[in-house]
Image 1 (cartoon, rainbow over the protein chains, first blue to last red):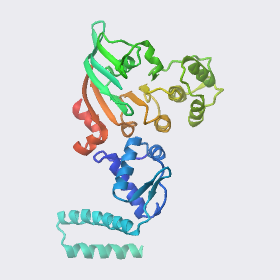
Image 2 (cartoon, one colour; image 1 turned 90 degrees about the horizontal axis):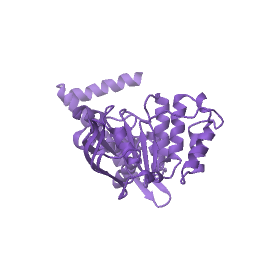
Image 3 (cartoon, each protein chain N blue to C red; image 1 turned 120 degrees about the vertical axis):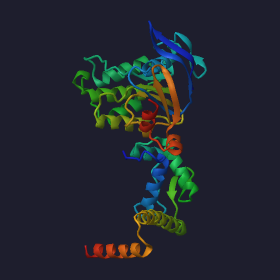
Image 4 (cartoon, rainbow over the protein chains, first blue to last red; image 1 turned 180 degrees about the horizontal axis):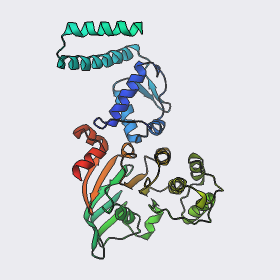
Length: 123
Length: 228
């Protein structure tokens, strides 16, 4: 069973997790998602909530439901790359907002990131 | 559908429920939440036809509840009562003999799912395994309504988790209505569609769990802290 944050709807937190797994390549394009029941058991979440997750992913065109076969991740590369850039944008937005609150300028943020990267590379 | 209309229940001079009205819809999982003595168990017993209102009406699918409702309702008692000479299999056979809708195949699957040994005597089972067995005989019935009174009370986290997974695996979500009375919310918050907060014999509020999060940014526990 999984942990969830109190302040966000559970269906949306599962949408978010699946999106991250797709972007990381843990779930491949064209791959079949677990059935609603299986996903409910894995996560410990009400199946109505899981159904809502799948409907939302379908509305976002990230998955498609084939009748009698199940729910599959899209194979459309443009949708997945769009998803990837959307997640990136969300993370950058949070980063920039936090840095601005601390009083950093754009240039300082960029040099900060470069320094951080170099240290990471050197291990 | 379960409906309470102006239901009051008195035990002598004590009022257990005071003019309570609400409706529960088919195919949803409800959490009946409230402190000890709030009226949760009394409400469930009324749905099960084990206790009758002093005034007002309790009905299930349009029929006024009487003793015969037992045919439509599977009820899990909060009591840990058992025949000590019975084995797990005896308990299953006995339960099956009492009702017409017992699903033997499902019972067998559930026994395996809960890792219970059919030949073991009930007195040799741990409290947790007796709780698992109670759930087995309750879920093995194909009834439109499942009532679970304190299914997690006094059980360790492993047992609680197996009960949650048992419910998720074996409830017929499209057709069964499930009502779970509990004062422990942690385990079941994610399992519930709706929560009913009850205190001192009165319904304080009925809310959809996801709506609470969406509109108020609150988990059920946070919401409970606000209203109690």
